[in-house]
Length: 362
Ligand SMILES: [Zn+2]
Ligand SMILES: [Zn+2]
Ligand SMILES: [Zn+2]
Figure 1 (cartoon, rainbow, N blue to C red):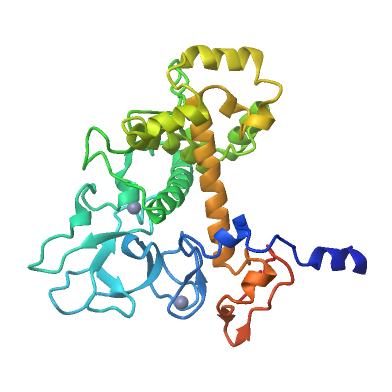
Figure 2 (figure 1 turned 90 degrees about the horizontal axis):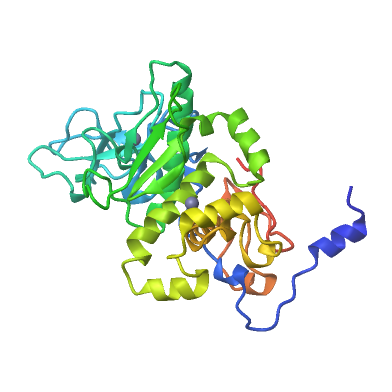
């Protein structure tokens, strides 16, 4: 237990030079709110398709970058089984993703048109009946094996978390249906008896993940053996999507020169670099120069690891701030807007930065 003195020290305001920009001051607001609410006011979460308290249907709507309460669409040529965002009866209509009732349990919404209206532009590139997150999946595990349903659910859940963040950051998420050359596709493959081991990786827009990574015991064993603290499904996706965006946004653009200055020459022999890493291990001083030991293998991996860690940190900060964690210093907070309220209670003002104030709220 903390002594009163420890508590005093922990609560002391963090002093910073006047006017100096800090990470905390730059993180004054989340990129996108990760705290979703039902129309009844209760908190709801990315996987929810219905409010467990008031049974209002819920769904993830890309236009809103979040989970929103829904109401059955009515009038004005609304088609059966379509919804509008609660409180916006004349707004766009949506239908459920065809994967809602499959093991993927997708709660995302698909743009739908009212009768006589053209389909919205963002409908292009979707597999018929499926949302954007499901439309980028190209191969799923063999569902005739019952245990694969659970693995698929975990894979899709992590992928939806990834894609919701990419959309919030304004990054292009284009399916293979829309762009067969540069579009994105995910293959979730399993090792076959006598076949080669399925390797996780990225190639020309196709991200392959060995479905066994969704088995917690298997992934945890490999995580410990490989000493990769961020070996999670979401960690894999964030790393591999880094390779995808490098191909798309760095290699064919003037950014490549700055990339090579910062990360090194990507034209170095990749296979030889990997072999050297697995035979010799990382350089002894890797921790001073790289975000992970794997990042030291090759400039491509340095980029992908750095990208993944940026997404880890940005999403953590967004989530924390969405739930009321304060990232500003006491001096800058004095000029900021009022604290959010929870029901009739004001959320207590934390005494120092990075203090959670809403744990257990509502
Ligand atoms: Zn509700
Ligand atoms: Zn879906
Ligand atoms: Zn990689």
